[in-house]
Amino acid sequence: MSPPSGKVSFGGFDPCTEDYIANYLNIPEVQKAFHANSTGLPGPWSSCNYSINGEWDWDNSPTTMLPVIKQLMASGLRVWIYSGDTDGRIPVTSTRYSVDRLGLPVKMSWYPWYTQGEVGGYAVGYDGLALVTVRGAGHFVPSYQPARALTLFTSFLEGKLPPSS
Image 1 (tube, rainbow, N blue to C red):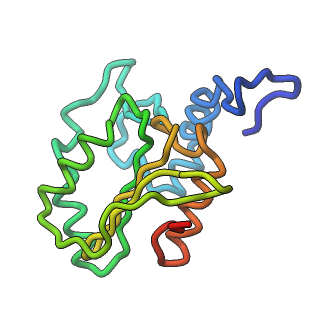
Image 2: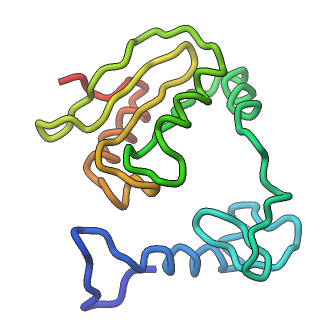
């Protein structure tokens, strides 16, 4: 769903993005394609959380994703965790503490990565996992920093950490 023509955007960030995402996620065909809503619970679905009648369904949320991350790594999948450095919901510090609990050996120490001639964020490579921050990005990294997000995702798809210069 694209924004209506003439829609005002603030600094490249559309304040109605949440509405577009929620509308899209609540299309039955989309839920079927994502294999979502298998519980049959009523929506509405939103971009970050699942709610029932406007109340957050905390009983359906894991306390930690670390077991899932371990399982993905054990299956041989490339695992990257990225975080906007201005994210108020999941701060970089919390993510770093969580990743540290995995006890993984460091293969590439923290370094600044670059895009368009400026620091895009910082990255560290572990054995089986990468943690990448995105400078100036909030919770929805591509919405806040699309060029930096593109560099991040391109690096992931190429199987290498973001560029150090």
